Image 1 (cartoon, rainbow, N blue to C red):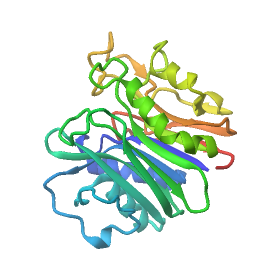
Image 2 (tube, rainbow, N blue to C red; image 1 turned 90 degrees about the vertical axis):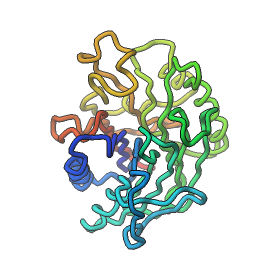
Image 3 (spheres, helix red, strand yellow; image 1 turned 135 degrees about the vertical axis):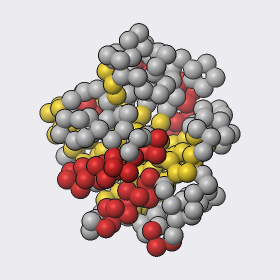
Length: 283
């Protein structure tokens, strides 16, 4: 099984259509089984997407409608055009930059989504407040595992502290964690080189960093330089390499490999973050 996570930056990227094509090309080459995406945007006043292009969607009740430039829907459609059965769910969370509906998404290649779990993790629950955060989880046909996509806040944000969001997340999934395998995928805004903060707290709670136990590791940093949210936090943002994006598991699995994708080496850069791809022996 292959799992991929990427903070897409989607419609905020310069030449985002070209980068979308590059991203899909990488997916077609690697064929991950499940993909977690963060910062998945659509323009709030764009035309609605036609029903014929919503094939494979698992609609979340009560959420806003999918519009024509929705990043997750575009990826799913390009994969289907290439002959890949793609099933997907998008959870809109907040209004971004005053003009985007921003959310998180999970895509499954080949297996249908049979169950979805979603809940807020931030104290703020205002759609028009950029601090609003939520979790999105899925179960797939033929698997008992739960896969969660997350975009967490910062350790030093007094108004929306990482620790509070983490506690809400863990309390909401405690039953699933006790009964089976749970994967947490996404942008945790948790640099592993800062002791005593987010990364160390996740590890102390019993979660396994799949990068650390992978038999083969290729690349490490998942963001580099002056990216949103970290400009003011780094002594020299132009030179800093950060590991912010992770795939965690509540059990120690046999991880064949952990690789960085879309970082300009073998894949073109498609976002201000790089992707993390792991290969696991079994679900």
